[in-house]
Image (tube, rainbow, N blue to C red; front, side, top):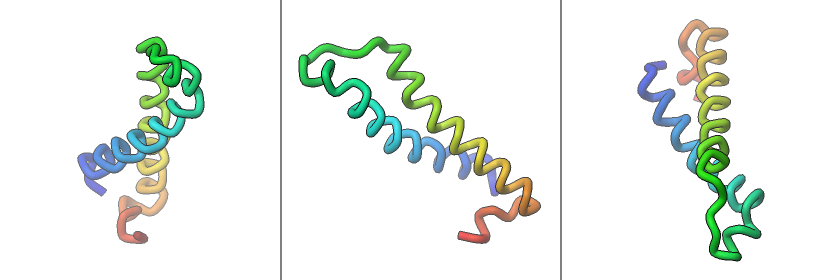
Length: 71
């Protein structure tokens, strides 16, 4: 799989999962109209991005670079 496709997919996963995690972890601040610290927001989106990219890379390595063919 091409690296750019992996990055695009990881960004999409991060956007969905990160947003859900922001809502779960910071609902009290959101409803109080205050913002959580920027570093917490950044990490909340970075973690699912890194997990998604890593898992895709490992799957691609295991299948000889053909992880997308299984989809």
